[in-house]
Length: 326
Ligand SMILES: Cc1cc2nc3c(=O)[nH]c(=O)nc-3n(C[C@H](O)[C@H](O)[C@H](O)COP(=O)(O)OP(=O)(O)OC[C@H]3O[C@@H](n4cnc5c(N)ncnc54)[C@H](O)[C@@H]3O)c2cc1C
Image (cartoon, rainbow, N blue to C red; front, side, top):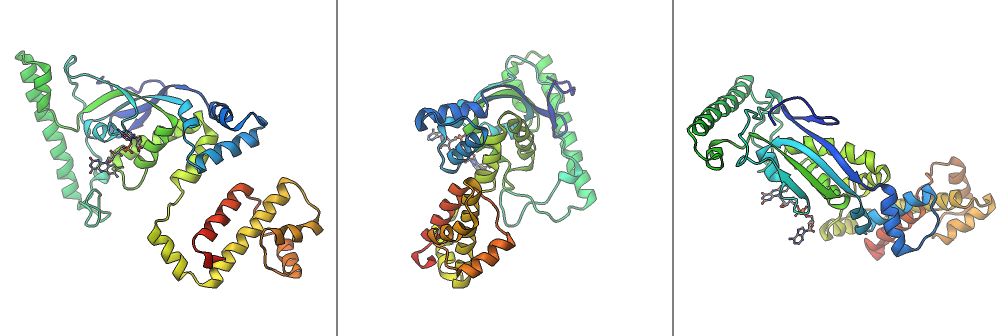
């Protein structure tokens, strides 16, 4: 510890930290392999594997994702480690200040990362610009306090005071290091919470770097994670009531109609059907347009060929929002 040289494969984080993926076990294939124990062998075509992984993610069938393991080596300020360590399912081994001497490695924020306390979010920072002098003063205080505490620590250390006690004079912007191993399901959970805008900037930097590393190990699972967990949305009962009551009938009808078109387009692409069969397919899926209107829309081809299963699920959800959505 102490050197600012980056170990192999590490991504620099903050002023003196880093994170690197040291080892991993499994890939997208391991997720599919485990899932097929419960769903049967089926085909091994890549497109089917992708659909299966996406299905598992959408339906929170999480255990197949636990078959993949990821081991990271990270160097971060202690106050970042304190947030990180709350993720209880990980296996951790940290640099010990009882055995080893602390190194003069302190996090000093960049002036552009110094913000006012948010008025709305008690745990956040305000976007209003802090005057340059106050930024400079904040950075200077970080430097002064780090330097002074390290001098005191060194003095106690040299006087023979036990390292396990002397370390207590050091502040939480001191850098520490650890190896952190977790399975993919819980790593995704960590990434979702710590890449979020509500997470502290300093931990977001690490989570964002780790996400790129995870993506390289499990590209298909990562894509599903991005689609359903990271950028997915959950609606509460209150949200749903508002949608149900406030959305004009016309909007509800348009939404359902659009989903029906996407569904027919998906079915058409999945198993190509003759043009004259499409209207029947459309009616079977609940489409209300006349054959002439359907033909005009179909010819305009403003429909995407989405995932059929997903479209069916979306349609079910729309119906579920209230029977009056029908
Ligand atoms: C923006 C933000 C603000 C936060 N603010 C605070 C704060 O002010 N104070 C504070 O103390 N913490 C705070 N936290 C930490 C937070 O409360 C969680 O401790 C942390 O995010 C870990 O989440 P977790 O428990 O879901 O994850 P993990 O510990 O990684 O666990 C993953 C999942 O495993 C399951 N699990 C793990 N262990 C157990 C168990 N023993 N029993 C049952 N189920 C278990 C749970 O389903 C859990 O969701 C904050 C976190 C965030 C992201």
